Image (cartoon, rainbow, N blue to C red):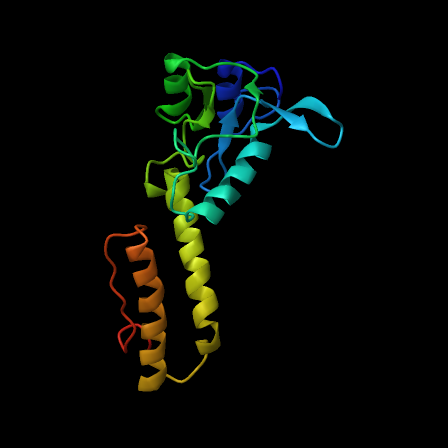
Length: 198
């Protein structure tokens, strides 16, 4: 909620507030703090919005200008929130560490000395440390899974003729190579033969 301090946001995230009794623990969500001030062209007024409003648009911008495996964070254009005029509170270094260490998964929005407001974190709410605690990794694996599924859909229940297996292998290799040359992954191996298609 608007007006939450850093400590209240951490308690909410950890299921220790009046509004939330269960800790957030999923790679399918992310939490940002604090609220953002933007100009609403419809009402012609400045207004405060939840950071999720801003970050949803930022993720789309990163997809459009880069790829989903780039982090929507940092001091580059991927992390600069150009539509945000101000932030509700100004987390310092200690605040940022408190929000981002151990099982805390709150991504701080900060104002730099030059006035730019940036997302200075990219963790999902997954509590167990793994690659999926990073937003760009989770988004990359989701995009890759979707691309592979859509590209091979016509082969479901198809006979395991050598021609079909070769076509599937070629499609998958093409997709994986695109991700490799784009910097999403370093290496891959495609196995599509009698060992996994009986």
